[in-house]
Image (cartoon, rainbow, N blue to C red; front, side, top):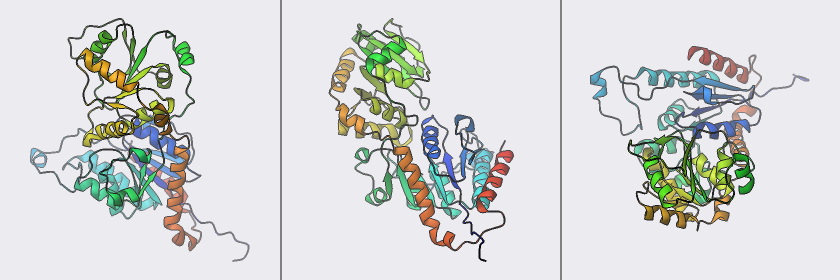
Length: 400
C-alpha cells in the first residue's frame, strides 16, 4: 500500500553469562553497553552483578545449579556423558535453567545467542535452531563437548589479541574466530606511578610489589608471600583481593593485606612489579598500564590460566610460575626475570576499542545471518522486538 512504511522488526540478541568470578560479567557488560540499539536479554545466575543502564536490556535470573545434588543416589551413580561437559542427571535447577532458555528461544525468535561460557548452553541454542556465538577462552578444551560447541557455533569471539592464541588450537576453529584484542571490562586512563602512589598514600622511594587475587579462585598464598617479604625486606608487598592462609604464617610489617578495593588500577599503576593470576580481566588491566608481571595461575577447569600464562611467557610479556615460590632464591629469580618483560609489547595487547569492535561484529553478524529473511518480512501487528520484551518480562517474573 502506497504511503505505508514497512517496519522490519529487529530481532533480539541474547547473552548467557557465567557468574563464577567477575570476568564474564565485566566482559559481557562492556560488549552490551556498546551494542547498537537492539533488544538484548541477559541470562545469569547472578543478575545483581550487572549495572547496565540501557532501557533495551533485560536481565533474567537463572537458578544456580552448581553444587546442587542429584535427586537420588541412583542418578548420582550414572556415568557422565562424553558428549557433554557438565550435565548431571536429576538436578532440578539445571532443568529449570535450560527450560527458561528454551522458552525464550521459542518466544523471542532471537537473531543471535552469545554464550560466555558453557558448552551445554551453546549446544542447547543450536538444538533450538538459534545461531550461537561462543566466547573463546584459553585452556585445553579438546574434549568432545567443547569440540561440539565450537563446531555448532556460527562464530567464535576471542576477547584477546591473536598473538596470544594457543599454537595447538585447531585451524578450522581459528578461522571462525573473531579476535577483537584485549578487552578491559572497565577501561580507565592509567595514572603514572608517582601520581598513583600519592593518591594511595604510598611511599615514592620504596620498591612496591602488588599481588592481585580475584574472586574466581581460592586466594593468594599468604605463606609464600611471607617468604617474598623476607626475601625483599626493604620492599613493600601489598595484597589486593582474596587471600588464603594455611594457619602457620608469621606476619611482617612489609606485607600488607589490603583486601577488596574498587580502585585496583591505582595499585597496578603504583607497583614496580605485579604478581597476579591469569584471568582475562586481570591480565588486560596489567597490560594497559605496562608493568613487570609474574603470572601464577589459579586452578581452573581445562588449565585455562596455565595456558594463558604460557602464551604470555612465549610473547615475553610475563614470567610464568606454575606454583607459589617457597624460598628466597625462587622469588628473587622471578622478580629479576619479570623486570626483563617487554612492556611495550605488553601494552599493545589491550585494545581501547575492543568492546566497540566486538559489539559491532555481533550486531553485523546478526543482521547478515537474517538479511534475506528480514528483507522479505512484512510488518507484524505486535512487532518481534515488542514480543521479545514481553517474553523477557514473563521470564523475569517466573524465575524470581
